[in-house]
Image 1 (cartoon, one colour):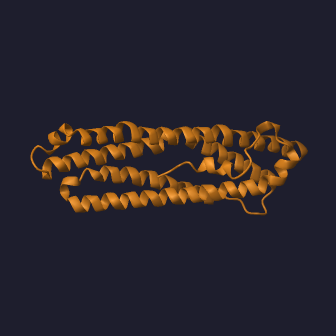
Image 2 (cartoon, one colour; image 1 turned 45 degrees about the vertical axis):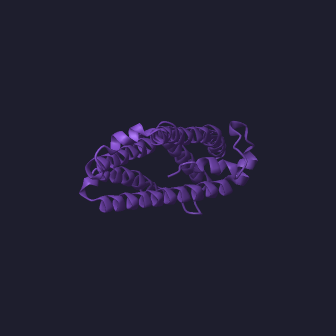
Length: 216
């Protein structure tokens, strides 16, 4: 599962300049940027929900294949379903908040401001609702594999794995380096997207909002 789509939003267009943006340019480009943001969020939510479904299907197959000994994987399935359900919920909320094409510009600007503030909150709390459940699911699956090896594997298989230098090195490399780097990278990329993309765009829209309300 990947949550780096915010970075892609700003790479496909000029980075927002923030409060120094020209008002005429903001008006001219507002609809285009609004549609691009909505389309990117739509694709992100569908992709994340779909990816979660595939992971759940794999975990369910793993459980069925290994039998009752693999029952703890149900907790990993529940965690992934929770994350996928979060993105499905985002789609329903976005549909409910969606404005028609004939809505006033001021209403559209206010809706985009609210949406960007919402997305900023999501990204800044990424650990609590996204990364932590994924990390917990990895731990659960890892513990389930160990349980299967103990119950179904040949006697002494765990001790032989720990005594095998190549196997031990691979386990340490994956769980101590690869997994933490992936989580740290996702966190860092999304923090940068907030700093370079969402926050400057909010400043632009707030400036446009002030102009619209002062002239009305």
